Length: 468
Ligand SMILES: *Cc1c(COP(=O)(O)O)cnc(C)c1O
Image (tube, rainbow, N blue to C red; front, side, top):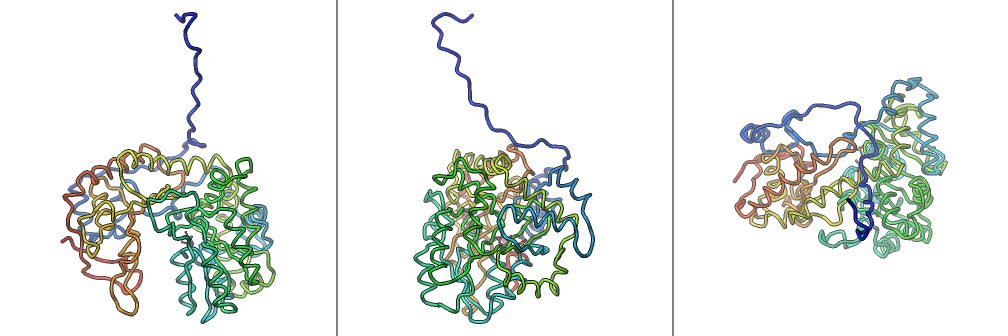
């Protein structure tokens, strides 16, 4: 019985749960440590070489691994497979126009195909393309045309323990210097949102505005590499002054208003398993890209995609630019980060939009860098719980093309990439506890791996290793 002098009942704030419920499930199974020890040995200690059946929780990538909604599956059935003038193309084009303000849209089969088509028109031998930590395929499409990608990311991105809201930003001082130095050689500026390579860190609206001003000063155009543009908009809404009351769609419109065009990997924020596109406000870019789309990808109203996939993408883009869907996703990544904080495990701070990047150099301090600490950590985590992460470190960095020496200059990270709408927070708990168990015995891990075979380029996919 409540007494007269009791404190008034406090209503608790309701926790925020997922903005969806589950209609279809896909069974996954655990395995024993001894099974996993054999499997990873058979895979030459390369996680890319594991059949997915041997993986319990797969954090290799968030690319094409998301779960489509019932509305997307329904749209799939409504796809129009007409060779020319497909209704599904117009649905996709209309959504892209609404979210970006860009008039012209060219579908491609994935993000790198968008780069290939647009850069075939824009990038020429001897050109320079400044940006913020160009994604590896983006850099590949620049360098294969004998042009140079110049990284102008803010220095703060390199200190994993520095807690700043927009660590993905372009350093506009560096950008200005590049434009002043190379002038006519600069084909365009490319800004990656969110900055994948720097740990899924966002770029602020203020920074996009400043990049626009620098571009205008030199008469240059700006492309947004937009794979995670919606997650970037979420961070602007929740971290940047003046945006709390704006909708995600209002924010994306403003973000793209500072750009001239975009390349998109729809496998990320489009929440489809395959797809991409180019969009631009400039007719000359559209006309130029058209000539490369047709031979490389296909006719302009499908350009490498099925009608049904364009239909599902149109719905995915619309859904994933709603706040609730993004909040569910990013709060899950933050939940995992909070569990790691509890155990004192160091990662690139703050948590990124799509992944946690564990700083292996601060965990396996006894493993020499020549023995690949982040890869060692990835293997330990797999053996511990069947969780597959991805080394973003010294193996990925390849050798210097001239000296053939390993490149130990960058960060050595274990990326735990969270697929969209696929795992629950119980899975996050398994990941966190498995990592804690490895972390607790970190001092007993003193040796890593040596390479027994490697490809000349992009070696991390196929490299063979042996324990030391
Ligand atoms: C994934 C990605 C790409 C390439 O897209 P694909 O669909 O994998 O070809 C380009 N840029 C960024 C930032 C990406 O994350």
